[in-house]
Every structure is written in C-alpha cells, then in structure tokens.
Length: 304
Ligand code: PSU
Ligand code: MN
Image 1 (cartoon, rainbow, N blue to C red):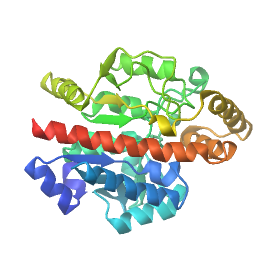
Image 2 (cartoon, helix red, strand yellow):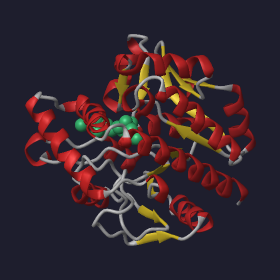
Image 3 (tube, helix red, strand yellow):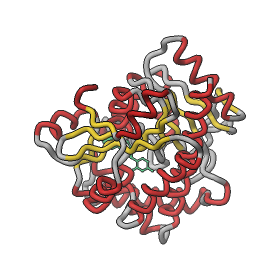
Image 4 (cartoon, rainbow, N blue to C red):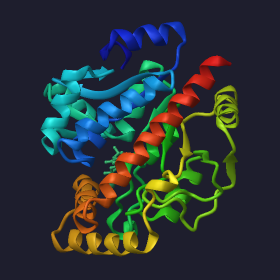
C-alpha cells in the first residue's frame, strides 16, 4: 500500500525525523457529525493535536488517492459532501481506489492507512463494535478485526454506546487486543464516563500509557491497542436519558429497516434529534479530548 499513499509534506517530514504524528479519521467528519459542525470539529482536532506538540494527519480518500494529512481544501471537501462521500472500511478500499472516488475512512480504514504510513497513534470518537442483536444480524464492525491486525494505538472514548459493550469487550479479548483504561477502571460508554464493564488494565498518566504501547511493540505483538479515555466530566451526559434515547433510536432504526453500514450514522443522527443536540456537543467534546491525549502519547513515544 505504501507507494499508493499521498503524504502531506509536513507529515512526511515529521515521520522521517521521528517526530510525533497523530492520525485522525474522516468518517466522523463525513458521516458522524452534521455540516458545518463537522468542519469546525475537524479543524479544532488538528489545532488540538498541534498545540500538544504533534503533527495531525487526517486520513481520507480523494479521487481514489489515499491521502495522509488532508489540507484545508480536502478537509472542507469531505465535510461539505457529508454522507454523500463513501464510508470506507477495509472491504471498500479497492472499490473507491478503482473508481477514483472520494472516501471517508472509518477506524478500520484509517488504521490500515496509518499503519502503512508508519503512524502508530490515532484518535477517534468511539470504535465500532458488536451491535446489539448481532447474534442474529451478524453486525460486528470491521474495526475489531482491524484492531487485531494493524499496529496502531487507537485513542477513543470506548465504543459507541449504541453497541453491546460487553460483547464488544469479549470480541476484543478474543482477538488479543489490549484495552487500557486511561485513569479509569471501567470501559467508558462514549457520552457517559463509565459503563458497568470493568477493565483490568489501567494507566494513571501518559508515561504509563506510553510504556504499555512500547512493550506491545517490543513484544512484537500483532495488531493495535484500544486506549479508552472517558469523556471529560464537564461534557458527560446523564446515563438514564441517554439510555432511553438509545432505545428509542434503535427502535426507529428497526422500524425504518436501517441496517449495515448505514446503521451507526443513522443512530448518531437520531440521538442528536432526540436529545436536542446534547449528544452532538458531547461527541465533539470527547473527540477533542481524545485528540489531545493521542498527541501527548505520540510525544511521549517519540521522546523515548
Ligand atoms: N467516532 C465518532 N463518530 C463516528 C465514528 C467514530 O465519534 O462516526 C465512526 C468510526 O469511523 C467507526 C465507525 O469506524 O463510526 C463505525 O462504523 P460501523 O459501526 O459501521 O463499523
Ligand atoms: Mn456494521
């Protein structure tokens, strides 16, 4: 894949010099947040990464080219296109490249491209996982398989709470993916700081976190890590109304026959409507916190 990458000059220089770089994804921009909030958020994430001393590399596909480090125009193009841009996971990659389409990369798509570029740290909102009812629908995000394959540390606020979090943790365990709680002993539930699911591994500060990532690499373990960073307290939502809104959104999705790759974007949009925009504010805040922690981690790893 390496020769197909289009690295922004700043990203290429930082990687060559061993300076810290953080990958950012674009499905969040195209499908996760509405215009123009998506563009504002995407820009803010890049500023946050810079302020913490790392170089941001937002990943997307433009005219079939795998771009690592979108420029301002590229960012705006994906943000404006919104849901019209193809949501690209592993299975979609060859198609968008062959057709020279624009694509917004998911956690899985971004991990593949980041790994090929040599970027080891990536920030997103929440990883995909095992959907509720997966026992019959078989809807399990390709993000989980990618976490088992690509050597990238993914900083997230857990998995989106529209999912079956317990089953998602089990699936990660089966695949040998470490899940490290950042200052938490519970798996975060995206808009809510903690789920009922305990985490065995916990890091108290960024140095602790960097030590685990370094050991993972030295051990030659395949695949990535999940760094679970709870949403900042001041932006966290109350668990009960969120849970009720999720039940309602899931029922609406079933009624409207929404399934497959359209399901997650549908649920996020419906939650925003049902909570009067509260989930949208929380989502933007948690991704920003993840971008900051990812940059601090990348800096700590580069310092060693
Ligand atoms: N985090 C967010 N919003 C999002 C996503 C993550 O705050 O929209 C995206 C990621 O790109 C993730 C995708 O890979 O949701 C999961 O999609 P699916 O459930 O179809 O695998
Ligand atoms: Mn799915």
